Length: 410
Image (cartoon, rainbow, N blue to C red; front, side, top):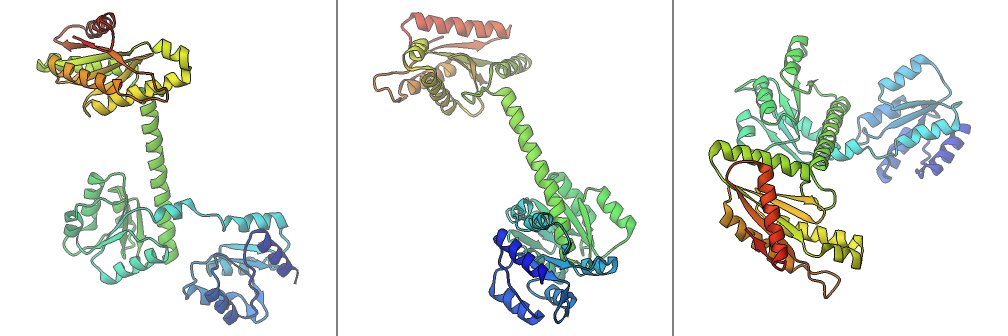
């Protein structure tokens, strides 16, 4: 009876429900009435061993509930028999109480991969109707609903859809799964592609994996093994997504100004050189605009640097929202900004500069009497040195300052 006391105490500490059943039939009835996520059972029951109970579970709607066996029997043969039946843990009654509690607690934690699996999109290509139903049943049990089923490769590719995960039968009527997998790896190289087949030949498996399949699962399907293999591949898929996201984030950080979100000075010069080379090669023109916030030091001194940062962000937002998508906007330094306008000559650049100047002049702040304005200089690249182009725009900007500010010179 000591193990029952232990189970009761652990259940209470894990906020679990302790259901006491004296027979297999009574236990199954309790499962129908309560929402159960973990079953703890002794190997030796009053009505015999737990084998019968576990076998009934495996053939019922509760087959996916993990089962943990408590026993005083440390027999290797019994342990193997229990694991063959599908239990997830085999705990001796003499085990350390805290270790037992720690082991059981892991089953109550939400699996982040399992949660994500339901958010992904799936395509199943199999011309066997029964196999499609079986896969659909596996997905349904695990609450995977965003699934499209196809009976031909033509229907799959004609759909025009891209999926996160593809389940591809190797033996198809009108084509081979090999060709489908190779085409998918060209079109959606980052997606998970899992081959399925009744062929269990090592050469076939090696061939399919070598052309790009992420895994190979044989028919008839074992439900638990199928979902375990799927989860393993999705875990790798999600990890690669996170790595790519982090890489993109680092790349953005390397080229952007952390305060305004515009490009930083180093990246602006890289793009200026690229535009200069393109202009020389194709005999085209481009222009740049340089802006400087008027009386910015006075704003900082009067209202503080935090307020000054707010102004810088508002000006940057006005520039970004007014410029074209192809334009390259950056923070040149301090309160100075620069915009590169590919394929735009001087006249068009002046029009855009005036539009941005007017938008900045209408910026609203928490200080009612404060008016934010900028002065600007516009220059067109007609060949020569990029540094000279920047210097020219900067000189024109200061002419705008000398002319009374809040104006554009070109």
